[in-house]
Length: 395
View 1 (spheres, one colour):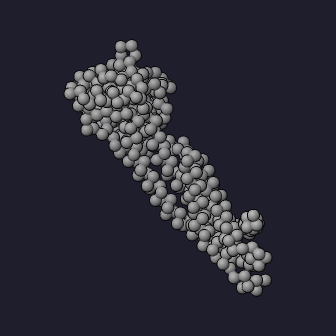
View 2 (cartoon, rainbow, N blue to C red):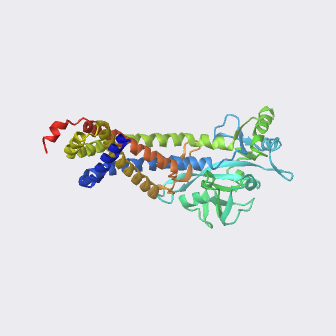
View 3 (cartoon, rainbow, N blue to C red):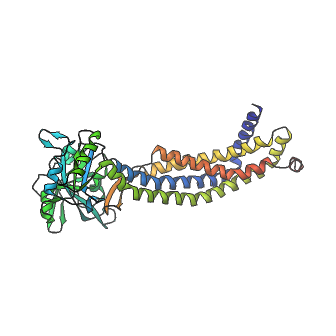
């Protein structure tokens, strides 16, 4: 207990003298806050992109593509094949209708609203049952398109990121003009980056015949997946691969998410080196200006371990303040910021919002405390080893 009282007494003394060293303390706090802002902001990109992809999937939905295809862009299914797939066990039904939508996926060029640069935007042809397969999708403005026409509906994120996607506007793609009649939401998932239209109309516009690229099936339950997959992979009439929708989108997000996280930690690591040197200089200054006080405390019976811990505690306190400041700035400046980037798997745009999550804020605080610990260690050791006689002679 005596040792803890000594640590508390010296730490409080150190913190009370911080205003006397305000300039150097602010430099350390701002440096650490800057590292935390950059770290949290960059990682919020990966978190937002990953969340947009994760929320597009459901464990009780299965995506069927041609065997060997990694994405819808490289897949291809004939109309007769999709009819066979819809007969597989495990598919949910509405009356006599299998809740499975055979779909076409193409890319069209549209300019970004912010810069005017062209971007690859997904145009998906769906079947009438698609809304029952995806119950999270809802029309929020305008109306649903009429099947058999050149009408389309647009995801809210796509409308916000790309020009010419307002309700009532026309989209020119090749020789075809599409009329936007509605906006839809899909719980913030990647589907909100897409434009949806009638699948047979899209087949005719792109001369695809009776072909699709994927089929999305709503299953009776998540446990029905194995029976559904086994029946299809064992059926010689079709040559397909079957994946849970959640697994498919998780794989889609892996490349970009890992890249952004690597860049984020790399940049933050380089910046942390500078912040640590700032903390070291701040704490060395603190020790130098209080050398006589520390020596006096040692002469009065305060041990060297208490002095070491108290200096580290001051460094950690300054680092925590910088970490909290950086986390708040990152949250205020980046959380919810809307942007879009390319999905390296399909080479199409994905609109998403930065996400500054509680986990990222905790990570930023942990980084700040780590920088404070490293920055305060050497000055703390020096303070604990100050020769008492030499320091007292300066009194």
